[in-house]
Image (tube, rainbow, N blue to C red; front, side, top):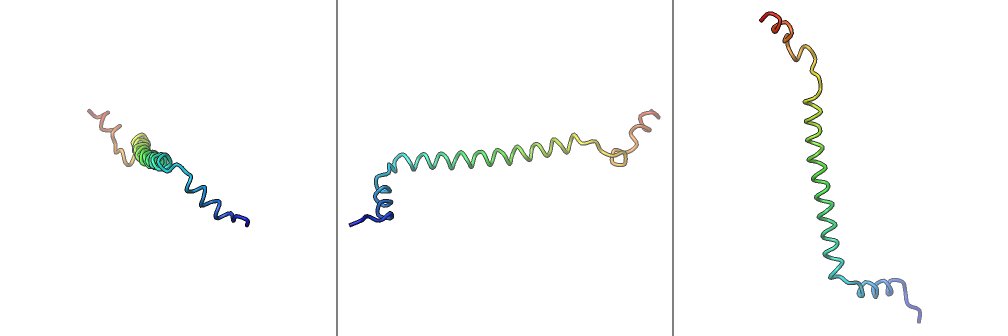
Length: 71
């Protein structure tokens, strides 16, 4: 009697070492979560840095040049 593919799959599934696969899977999920959270934090920090380094227009800065000359 020929054995079906699904039966072979179930037999292989029972032979897997779940005591190793579950912790490794949990560590991989934790690593991906950590990397995503770190990337979001770094992205926010980079955006703040770029916004602070951007030169403002003269209208936003005010007339600092004229005020400094008059003092």
